Length: 506
Image (cartoon, one colour):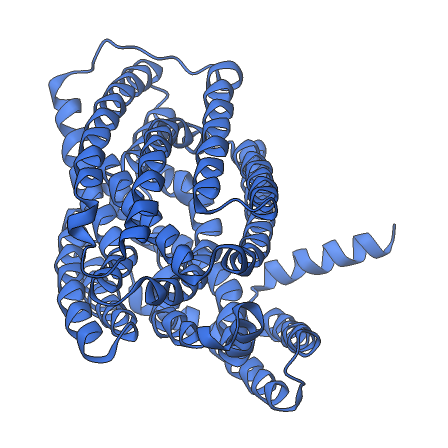
């Protein structure tokens, strides 16, 4: 048990180390890419990665299925069923990869027809080979995801996160060299595919040699197969919802406006994805633990308390990011990619506000999946995602690219914060009212107090990189002090004090 706790702690620390590296270097790469290839070609790159993302959705959320079932089998110490389950999953992934490649070829053959009204012939000529290369990347990703799920279910977060950091640093280095030598978007796509293949090999070797996982192609009984299929189907709906909410906007803007608008929108979207990653770094670490709690028949109160614990940790991080972005995000974007991208500030901020609450309760999804009661949530969110499409198309036609952000934000509130919470409260019996009361109780004073300081700093500091750094650091110091007082529990304060004093006495 102590080893698992250590893995979780290291997993969280390495997740945030990975996030820091990925976000800092990833964001620094964006203006470098735009400078070397131009806004339009960067928009093309955004489009091709969006199209590739739609093919990955055909995985149907099987990686989540792997975590849920393997965690359950490990809790019950049923190694035979675990081996049979892994055999089923690898077979399914092989079939899905073949289907995805077939669908990808059909999409590739129709790219000219899809984008004939919004892209020039030269842009389409660039889009086609880039998409063809990314098809290979998608196939690698799908097969790699099966092994990622196994590693997560075994809670070996240290290996996974260290590998992520190394692979990302390699990717940034190769992209920088390629663009510096005068290469274009195709180079980035080739690099992405190459480093993805290296990461896949590392995962496969780790599962085979280190975890020594058994695989049996003697399939389990029909009842277990049906359970896997039904469970995965509704996970797939959730994956489709995420694709609609976060990738379809690029496609809508690309077909209704221009490649430049796609580039502007993608800058804001990248900031939102970074925001999501900050919360996921914590929640993903605790998914296997939640599955085990449910498997061992934890009470609703125990589950609610665990969600509050995870949610508070997420709010500590997300609160600082949101407050800092509200105060200094506009200046950051202006300095980062230029004043012509100022609309990206609102593209990011509009969905960030409701998303903070959605992300704080994201661990409730693991509870639903562990209970095999995620079906209703998936259907509710699919309905609101389709509503998002209709609203976004209408608003993009009326007011431009900000319409997509407004549509997404509105449907997040309706689907995640209203309908899903009603279901969690009435059916699952989680005390979501108390959950939010505890979150607001520990986070609101910190965020409001810090925002006052941050706003004042934004009015007096020079509009420069130095001013931005000073403002963010000052805001961070104030936030940490207030978070210590209001956000941490008594036990957490004691651990912090013990850590600080033990360091000082050495």
